[in-house]
Structure formats: structure tokens, C-alpha cells
Image (tube, rainbow, N blue to C red; front, top):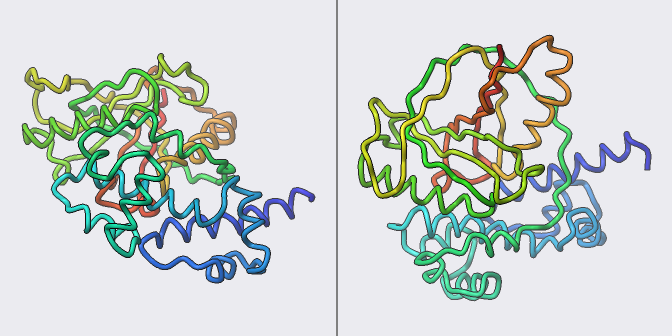
Length: 288
């Protein structure tokens, strides 16, 4: 298959994957998905499994359970039955059965004691990188005081640090998620960094220094200055598809030089309040 035909084939699957993410709570029949991609419904199962590495039904189930997992842990006031129905399950029984068969524990058990590292092992299916053309803006970013929960260690355990930061936000009220900006500081690339050495900060804007607290949240500053900004649409799991073109395609031809400050993200909206397919994230690359 030549490059042009391969790109066209990949684009058709990208439409299917985007459609699935945007309609997880709805019925997703093979007939409908094959129509989205303009593939024959008789061959769609085999084509999908060959392209992604798992069957379409399993892929949809895993995405629904991923959405539900975030709701269970980060939105603890929500009832399990509401989480199940929103994720596209017919009833709590079918949800609990699928959850236990996939993760080896009940939804309530996961809510009490989530094992994110083990959870991540279910999501190691093949997801080909989309070739995106990014739109880059040069902007001035003002120095911003933030509360930061430092994550150090495997990226698979980052949700444990997120949970600590959310707990700090809720108990102190010093950085309310609906009233201030939320950031992430990416010191390392998880694809090239030894897991034990991976560093990432989960941050929320604050108006003053952070008092000592049991969650280990500290005060930091996002350095102001010129930045290249790119907007990423969709799941945080695929944010690299917007980062790599920035470094690989735009930077070498831009005439710009990088400043000594890490790449950082501004999360315009957040899980679990927003479906993965509707997430919006601005990526900032600091420039001299």
C-alpha cells in the first residue's frame, strides 16, 4: 500500500475512533461504525482488530470502563448506577460484571482502593499515531503562581497524585477547579524516560503561597514569557500527537530557540466532568 492510500485508510479509522469516543453512552453497532468509516460491515471486525490489535466490541468496552473508572475515583459523590448508565451500560449488574471481569474487582472496590498501575495494563492496545498538522500561535504567558502536587515515578501511577491534588483542592478551597486554571508541567517524556525517573506536576492557580498540608501540595511558579501554543482536542492519552509535530515539524523551521523551562499544559476542561472526546488542552512550549 503506497503512502497516500495508507494515509487515506488511517483517516477512515481515525473517524471511527473519534466517533466512538464522542458517543460512548450510545448504542455503537458494527453496522453504524462501518458506515462512519465507509467500510463493508462484513469485513469491519477483521479490519478493526488488525488495525488496533483488539476487536471493536472489546475496544468500546474498555473505553466505557475507562470513563467509568475516572468517575468512580474522581467524582465520589456520584452513584454507581448513574456512572454505569452514563457509560452506556444497560444496568448496574452488567456494569459490575464487566468491571470485575476486566479489572478483577468490583466498581465499589476500585473506588475505595484503585490500583492504577494494574488498571493501565488493560490499555496497552495498539493505537496508531495520527499525523496531525498543528496550528501554532506565539503568545505571551504571564508568570502564574500555582499549587503543585509533584508526581515522581511511573506514568501509570499519575492518577494517584491527581487524587491527592483533588483532595487538597476540595478540602482547602484555595484553588477551586471551576474558578481558576488547571495546569500540568511535563518535565519528562514518558516514552523516553525510565519509569522511576518520570516527573510531572499537577497544578492549580492560586492567589497566595500554599500553607503546609497533608497532601504534599507546594507552591510553584509557571515562568512568564514567550511561548508557542498549540491546542489539542480529545483524549489526554493522545496528546503526544500534538506535541511531536511541534518539536519535529514546527520548531526546526521556526527560527525560535527554547527557553529553560519545561513544556506545560493548560487544561481548558477536565475529566471526569468532560467526556474524553471533548477534552480541550492548550500546550505551551516556552521560547526565548
